[in-house]
Length: 174
Image (cartoon, helix red, strand yellow):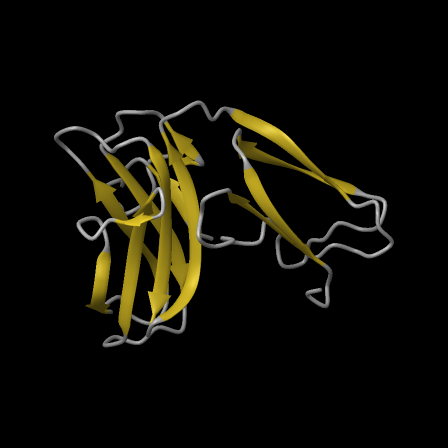
């Protein structure tokens, strides 16, 4: 459930959740829930801007101190000039194993659009990954755990206007 905001409230919550933010923002923060962690584990939060690692914005090879369950956040900032326009991808890893990723657009023309996935096959769809072209990873499944798209049905997703890659899987992950 990795989501993005342009800041953090006093009680460690997203100011407002976004899929794209306008040019000139000084901060983008990624928020997620976690479970099964142990203090002392190694973790990373790697920020990529247009496929280039931002070492200054990333948390690299850090020791976890957040407990077993809860929520966490990390931000990439540029208070002086604002963040450069581009595709920002956040990859969260624990013990060198990627746990999830998601991308957000900073700047550019990315109004929300409706994107229909129309299942014209005879097989139910259980997984839909819609990733901005240029992102390194698929991100998270757009369907909830109990949700699917039955044969002959369709589902509409609100996403920022852009070019995307898409991966659709049936319930056996084919």
